[in-house]
Length: 304
Length: 304
Image (cartoon, rainbow over all chains, first blue to last red; front, side, top):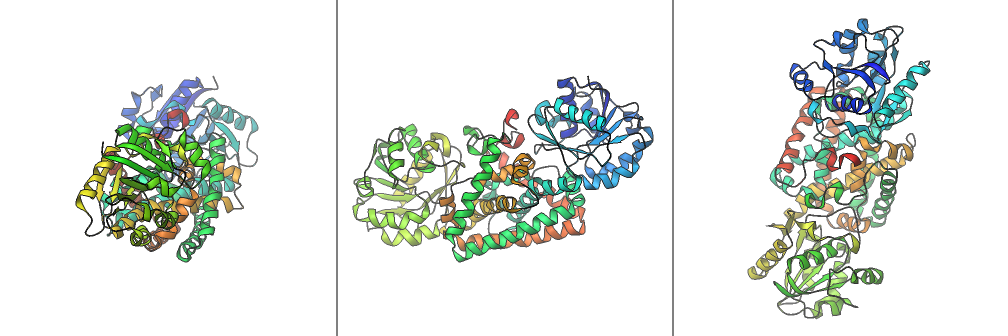
């Protein structure tokens, strides 16, 4: 057992999956859950991934050795303010947010002396939300990035690393700013693009929404999957990783202008070269086990 | 049996899948295959989806009741020129190309009197290529769009419709120009965007390719799937559907500029509204069976 008492604040997809993974790995003596939404608290209690649901966030963290913020990032500051006076000396305070610079900015100043604040981010998810969406294997083989601040306690960092490995994840350590740039490229801008193209399809008068839905198997449906992710979580990501998102988006736009010109000019060899080059990255992703090589865009043949 | 002899020209993913589907549905007395690539001809012969592989494209179409072009669209004109003198009177000449205006422009003038030219497009595919990639159920439940020209023979159109239904598809009829716009929205621009963002990730100096691959599970990997599609086929799509692609891309760019401004301004409520609206289209796609509702982006939990 790694921790006596682990508290999960926010019981959506990630919080509930963490609870299941902790139970599977027997990583804690007890798991305490809390969610600001009373309905979520009531539903989560029966799902078996906690030992108890606390009635208040203050009570939830009392005596906890590890407290993990699993709410949307926009709620961190008020949660941190509420729990700070109740955190045990020596406890680890961590999170699962998709951005790290804003978390350090918002939460860092509120952390009491003697509490180890170590931001973290598991790169895993589905397009489903809520406590019922969680499952124990969500983190298996995926990466969790820790972004400890300069001078962080090595023992605490090492304990958190072992905890995530116990949840099935591989762990990497990274600087806060670099994390935010890497994720802007691998996750945030892809989501922004997906939301955008689904919005374009929705607004296009010459093509009906029925046609878009009917003929989506040609590629579009894969974007709608990503664009079905939780709106609150994603709003908070874009409000809190503005600089890195705008930087990557700027590069994307430059590249798209060039590609647009190739289409306009009928530059077949430039198109062919780009379309060939992009295959190599795909191969890397499949070779390193970050995606399945199964055909049909990962769908069963019958669902295809 | 619907046709005595069906000829498939081009034995990649779609040609080979058609062969398997014809065999499964017993839709033809015999299936003759041809591919310009001798190596593909040699491999295809042993895969069971044809009765014979012809040595020349002229021999392949001799006496065929239905000839289907399954090569990349850029090869249609030369193939049509070669086979035109050898097509049987009363035969149906069709295709599976992702664009239709250019096909009518390139192939139409070469079709001899007495041959029924009916362009078609099955909206189905995977990111894999080649004769080994084909399977009989590729078209099951997917849509095939027919774009018969004004004055097309109704019996021939009806026979082709029944043929595709025999292959498992649902069939819709559409005007050529409308097809090209609908597909620009649901397939061509999504592919262009996917190729583009994978290219951006490849070129970004501040984030290594290893990092992109490692942390791709946050959304990026779904784009790499699409961007792994056949480069020749997709080059030909963009060379041959320029106007509609540029039109949809123009709208996409306008929308992206607006979204970029929302991110820059921190306009959380506008972001939230867009991210909520896009969920409805996703629901439509799942409800109409054009995608699976299984979580984890369609992947098995263990592959997730």
